[in-house]
Length: 113
Picture (cartoon, rainbow, N blue to C red):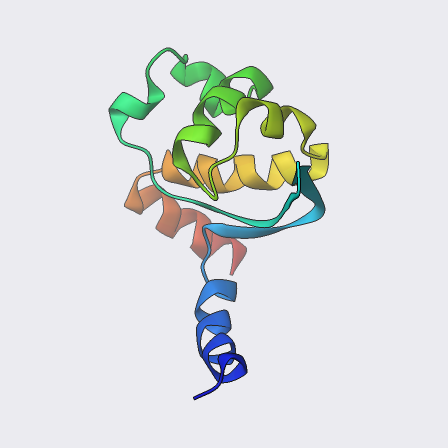
């Protein structure tokens, strides 16, 4: 199997990941360009030092502290500060989903279906 075949096999799973987002405006850090970010559900300890009400309201400062703890590739606070606002809102929306219970998510999904 050549490299292209492996990429074709892996790409659909990545694209379908609801916790991944392709940035409209990639983040450039030195010689690295970050085009896609995946967030994982945080543990309570990863929310330390940040007000839950600030996170619920998607406060930029709060997101700047938490996103580096749960992103892959790992974003720095400076990276988050440099993200296009539209991209930050989308990442914030993914993060907000982590704060919902399963019952609330089901209700929201039924309303938007």
